[in-house]
Length: 313
Image 1: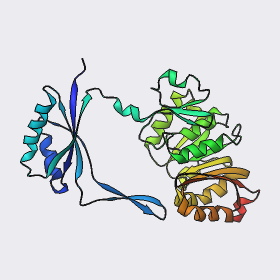
Image 2 (image 1 turned 45 degrees about the vertical axis):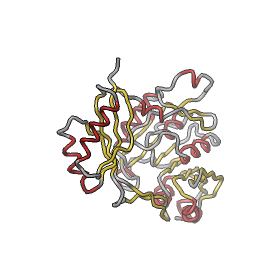
Image 3 (image 1 turned 90 degrees about the vertical axis):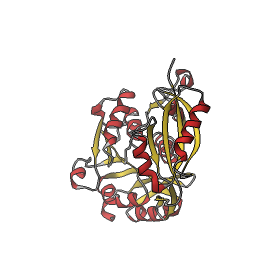
Image 4 (image 1 turned 90 degrees about the horizontal axis):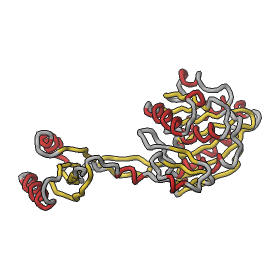
């Protein structure tokens, strides 16, 4: 029988957080992690986060369950009472020692004619699916649930990617790059991301989809940096950018320099209130708008280069 643990969610006043966590390390309790309070701020470029200096910190604490839960709770309450109300118990949950319940948050999702699913998905759930991308969540962005990723995938299903040279800037976990490889894009597909964790995650997801490492060229760094720029394809038929409105515009010199005549670009990570800024910058550089999708406030735009786009920058 698997050992059960009690998971306590505590609210801890910020001024005593460090002292309390240090004490936990020498107590019968197991410190899990803490989460400072953050506020989501709306900015002209999308979203930002600011630490809230007033509200309590959330601290997660664990303890093996060896007696009735009520007795454990009473003992914990006695333990925190000496902090004179600066700590409170918000929630208690029974969990297994080998707890995989986090996996429940990552489920299969259908995007057009394709499914994105983690490798632990029950086979029966996908028995009718013809096209599956196996993507496990990790430290790199991209699980397939975000509207920007889904809207790009919908556009990719409407345009021809076979034999195209593809440059994926902001590749994250590799969802879009892998879709292109599987659908016959010219190899290698160039996957660029500034997050060092992307390399491992893309390689893992490539293996999950039986895609050879040679089918992808993973570049870690900023595509604007000279060292990375030298590794990019001389011309790309399709460029994907899912990085943010300001970043999409900042990347315009690289895009205009490397896009093939009449090539396509997919711009995403844009929010509706900076859409006009992004659109105007690319139109002035010689790109024509072919289509647009919006999921909540997130905008994705399909554009096509003219034969002399790079000359108009």
